[in-house]
Image 1: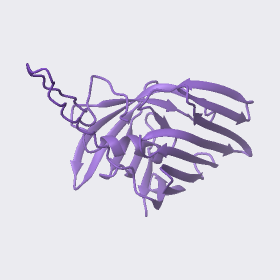
Image 2: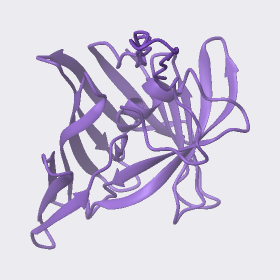
Image 3: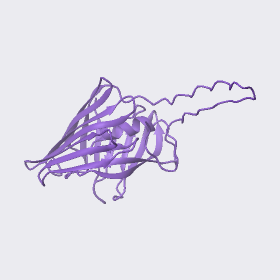
Image 4: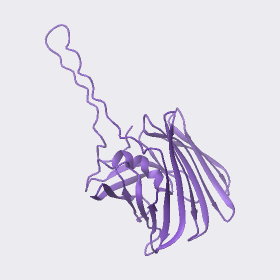
Amino acid sequence: MMPTVRKNTAIWASALLGACYGHAQTPAPEAPAPVAVRPPLIAPMTGHYRIERDGQRIGDERFTITSSAGVWRVEGRVELASPTESVHGYALSVDEATAEPVAFHVWFEMFGARRDAQGERTPDGYFHVETSGIGGAHTKDVPYAPGTAIAYDSPLFSTLAMSLLVRSLEADAPVSVRTIALPLPDLAPTVLLTTYALSKRDAGIAKVVMTRPRTELPVALWVREDGLPVRVRTYVARGASPIERNLEE
């Protein structure tokens, strides 16, 4: 299924059903409908992002992508020494046939206190999300629509949308995707639109600028053709130095 978009922006070709009727009593057979081909998700791999700020190493993110029984899954762990020492992790499962997320688990730990959020898509069209830890426990059923992405503080959560969009993005034609965001540190699920805009392409790498409402601080992604960011620049505060992630496979 394709992401929800604004301005009727097409992500890939829609399937068209055509039929030809003559004057004979027996109608002519319908032409077969073309099948929309979805680009594949990123192949199984293990990777590592070196995290830096002002040229100094401040942390690491390590992740593993697997594929089994029709489910694409990414798991990872992020360790940061600055600006505040913390550790967090994530797991995201996606149905390979539909490219729709089916479950996630994210957690964040700082000063010995931990917060968890687990979500699972339900048959009646919701993401059932349970959060627990410091601040108490909460349950929320978030309405889900086909094409919705899950957002978290990791480039790997952008790969689902990027694997579908990166080949078709055009300059001056941004695409907005309905998103369930899980912001740190409370991990409370929030529905919003994430906008992806192509800045340029160079040697098979697309520079994409990602923005979300409620903040004017963009995230710059340098993305391979399969949708994996090889470099990420995150602005955390106006006038402050950005945080850089660089892929080291």
